[in-house]
Image (cartoon, rainbow, N blue to C red; front, side, top):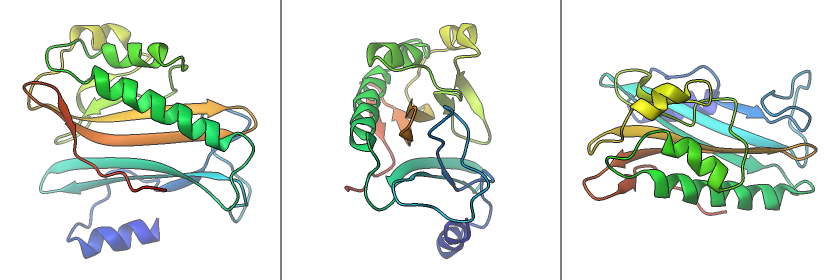
Length: 185
């Protein structure tokens, strides 16, 4: 968290949009974090999720990294997350129902996550809020050109952990564009 706050301050931003910046994913529960340990261990999957508030607007990004030697199954989990991300990106089209992002999980063969799949970025937790708990709302919302959303690919496997990828995406007149970069490796 300290490294994230330092990087934000170096960029001229001093207000985080969320409290947690890094956590070890659980190998036993789909959305619990590892607790009771003072340090990370070889094979842990660690999520880094940062959000900032600058000039009245929020931005978000999330990535997962394996610590040391990848644990058993991590490579496959990262591949599943990449396949899910591709399905989500393909669903980010102007004029389509926001619930298409929920459908992308099914198309990729993944379970819906315990958090929103997407939400608008702007001055807060803006519409559309695309969540497994609010499917009717997602069916009523459309993705419109100019809309900026945070889209989350999240896959979990017992005994392995979770991989989260979150990107800011702008819906364009003829598709979408990912606004966050994805470092290799």
